[in-house]
Amino acid sequence: MTGFAGNVRRATDAMRDLFPPTPLLRNAFLSERFGAEIWLKREDLSPVRSYKIRGAFNAMAKHLAAHPDQDSFVCASAGNHAQGVAYVCRHLNRHGTIFMPVTTPKQKIAKTQVFGGDAIEIRLVGDYFDDTLAAAQEFCATSGAHFLSPFDDLDVMEGQASVAVELIEQLGSAPDRLVLPVGGGGLSSGVTAYLAGIGAPTRLKLVEPAGGASLSAALKAGEPVTLPRVDNFVDGAAVARIGDTPFEVLRQTDPGDVLIAPENRICVTIQEMLNIEGIVLEPAGALTIDALVDLGAVIQGQTIVCVTSGGNFDFERLPEVAERAMRYRGVKKYFILRLPQRPGALKDFLALLGPDQDIARFEYLKKSARNFGSVLIGIESGAPESFDTLFAQMTERGFAYRDITEDEVLAEFMI
Image (cartoon, rainbow, N blue to C red; front, top):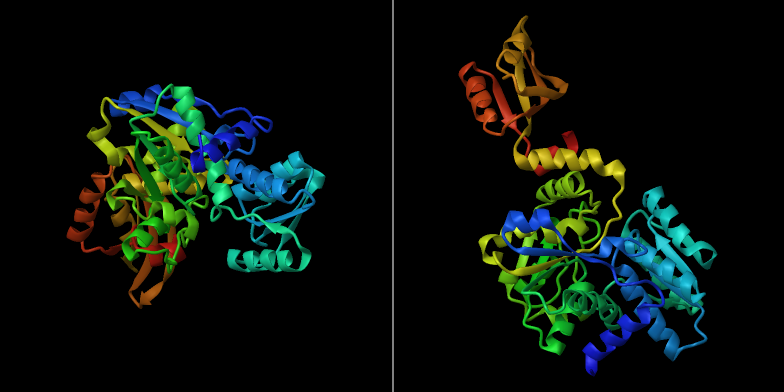
């Protein structure tokens, strides 16, 4: 095997000194739900709970093969890439300097330090990632250290593509469809190039978060573009600009094969996998499973592999996940009520609530006029359709209100 596919095969073999293949497991719950053979490639069970260790290892190993005296490596990351680099630095006995934003949660900093031990130094620089990246690159320019890109590097792409080598060997053949997450494009481009190199008939589906659809934007423009705004909730895949090198591989992708996953729907998937299957996935790790609902009947009877790309989930985020999931399912609404300032007005409103509706938030905002006050109210309900009845009754009784559940600007500042 030669070319890119041959390099991927050799990278996969070399990784066995670092960690065994991650499991490929058939999921009975998803298989029954979608009428297909659904397998999960569990990258959330790698030593650092994500696939990023693969690209970091291959990039460092290949650089050391060409430059054996290189002792210092650098990366800029607040997440899985940092942990992968830290782990590999310790394994290869090389020093790593890992730049992280000052705003990085302490849990992520601590995990990175545990993986790297004495082999790494963590530097907290900048409030935003762009500042962190600039500091890391400046450090490389003055120190002679080698910079390790999280995705925009051919060696990284080769390392990430080892996922495909393993899953085909584990399954015994190439699957009918392979569902991959897309962030900067390292995994998706590497696997795409590998499957093309071996002539596999597998149909690829790529999944991006709605708030970071950089591949879709690049395909539309014909070149990588920088998104004006990114929703960082899916922090492992919310990338403002897809990598130049990965896009050269992905530019021929049919836009119809790129799926967009809404952030709030991803939260429903995270909850389901945790509560039903006991599988802990970070938002990016749940992307491919979440996209199965978009594939629908087309996958029935087929063999599908979903890559669960990461499980580095901070459980302090569970309340936010639950909140977003309820809003997606339509069982939680927020609205601003213009409440008359008279005795009994609040009692009149409360009388409209059904037996399955609870007030989860009640906050006076201000008196907008002498005789009225604005109130922020959050209501949880047993069924989404009950809100239609509630709002109809509110209108009939003369209560003025504004539903702000889906208003991104107001929700960001008020909810």
